[in-house]
Amino acid sequence: MTTTGSALARFDPDAPLFLISTAARLAGMHPQTLRTYDRMGLVSPTRTRGRGRRYTIRDVERLRLIQSLSHDEGINLAGVRRIMALSAEVERLQAHVNRLMAGMIRLNRASPSSRLFTVSGQEAVFTRRDADIEPDHQDG
Image 1: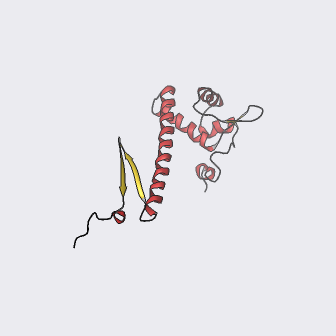
Image 2: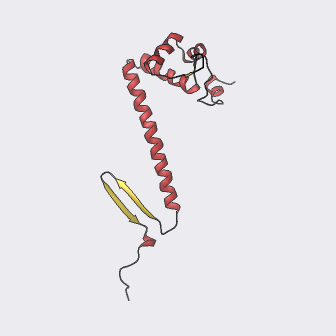
Image 3: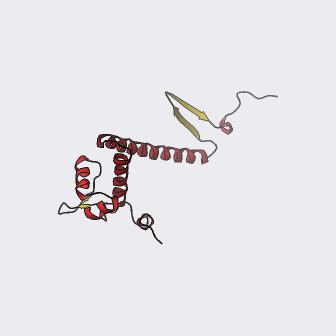
C-alpha cells in the first residue's frame, strides 16, 4: 500500500503542483491560514498568471513544519519565522561546506606536487605534502 508521503516522493519537490485547497488539505490547515502564511512570508507559493497560488511538495512540508512548531511546540509565528530563517541559513552553510569539502577531496587526489592553502580561524596555513619537501642537506 502506498502512503501519501512515498507517493509524493516520486515528484519533483519544487514543481508547483497543488492548488491552495489541495495544499491546505495536505498540510491539515484551512486555506485562509495558507494565505496568512503567504502574506507573512512563511511560505512563498508560485503564482500563476492570474495570481493564483500553486504550492510545491516542499511548500507542503514547510507548512506541516510551521503547523508543528506553532501548535505542538507552542512557538509564536515570529519565532517560527526566525527558526525557518536560521534553518535556511544552516542549509546554505552546509551546502557551502560540502562544496569546500569536495574541493579538498579534489586537491587531495591531485598530483603529489599539489600544494594546499587552508584557513583555520584567524590564521592561514600553507602546507606542502611530504613528497614535495626536499631536504635542506644531504646526510652522508
